[in-house]
Amino acid sequence: MGAGGTGSSVSRRSSLSPLTSASWVTSKAGGRYEMLWHMMRQASPLGTRELVLFALLVKAYALVYTFSRVHHYTLWKFFAKLLWKNAATRPPVLIVLILLGWSWVVRTCTAAGMELELVLGGPTKPSSMAVSCALVLTNIFLSVHLVHLLASEVPGLTWRPWLTTNVLLHAVLALVIAAPHKWLHADARTSLLRAAWDSLIAPFAPVSFWHVIVADYATSLAKAFADVQLLFCEAHAIASLPEQPGAPYTRTTVLWEQMHPACVDSPFNPALLALPFWVRLCQCLHVYAHTKEQKNLWNALKYSTAFPLIYLGWHRRVYPSPFASRLFVLAAVLNSSYTFVWDVLMDWGMLRWDKERSCWSLTMREQTIISARKATYALLAAFNLSLRFLWAMAVFGAVPTRGHGMFFFEAMEIARRTVWAAFRIEWEYVAKVLPKASATYAAVDKDSIDGEDASLLPVHDVERALDRGPKGAATAGARALRPLGTDVDL
Image (cartoon, rainbow, N blue to C red):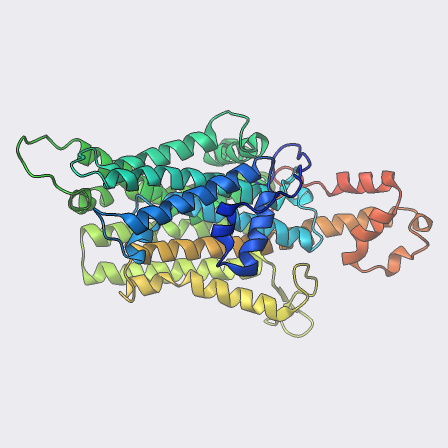
């Protein structure tokens, strides 16, 4: 939700006296939570009300946890019911994590001096907007689950509060995000939805860098798409069970486990898992059709390696055998290795061939923006490599892959994608924006830039010099820097 329409200035309210509910939330959190509180309060004109509602909901949850009579929760079980118990609970939490991660991406890139609108193709909302949206969705999430927890305290209910409220939550979140209302940053949501729609019809729609970012985030949500299919499949199966008068009530969790094999083995599950990769494949082929650059075919091949992995994972569940497991591991190694190498060489441009030393010599690129320390980029590569191969822990049974185990893997993938996005934007800025800025600056009268010699300025000082030049030159430079249609490295 970063490349929205015209960005309005964020209105900041005057400081309010500390609220009792807010103090209750932040009393044990220390300085970090106080900083988060301050950032959230300035997120939007509705930030204060949203934060007060959040504090009240947290208090309500504390009361339910403390005084529950029907359910005797441990703290682990209490959070499990909300966050990671199974496929019904995880997708909304992942959406909130993505918004918080995108806020970090925007803050990191802008703090490094990058003008994101020159890369994303339009005015970019401030990082506080993503935090505000995450807070709104969190309040919806907590409100709906509070109904579930309170209803669970009433004995004798047969409308299955846990399952019903989870289905309702997904429907409400879909309406809040996709409905044509003016609430919740309508221009940013419109930009996001338009990019998502263009990505779905990629062979027939333009592909910009913003489309690429949105579609790549969708690949990190592939398991969440499959989780949504699983939720609605199981909800339909449970709701379709015939009523048996006089029969004892069967808990929803028991029925969920009974219906799980049929729903997870449905062909719709792997189809939704594969959909984001199919979208990226079509985008790569679309760009190749316009540019004829062979690297787009190699990128398309990268995304196509996900399909054998998805099929073999499904085949291993339905027709288990040692041979199927070995093929699955082989496909996973191929996919993870290919994507990791592509991340380092193409998406981040971290390594360059040094032909002066040797035809096989690789060196770290000199020009960086986010960090001047090369060790940061080495740690980035190691971080990406480890998370790319975390799937191996599940394959070899080191951790459970349902419940908290699957939530851990999905959350780590969101973390990896967040870091990937920041450095992907950096490389796009270095490769596309700065060369155009340098060319534009060379055409500006050197005497108009406080007497500095333009030929002696390093590339990373070009934009700073442009800002000190005449307004007309800066405007011309901004126009020259704006990304062009499908001219994008995928």
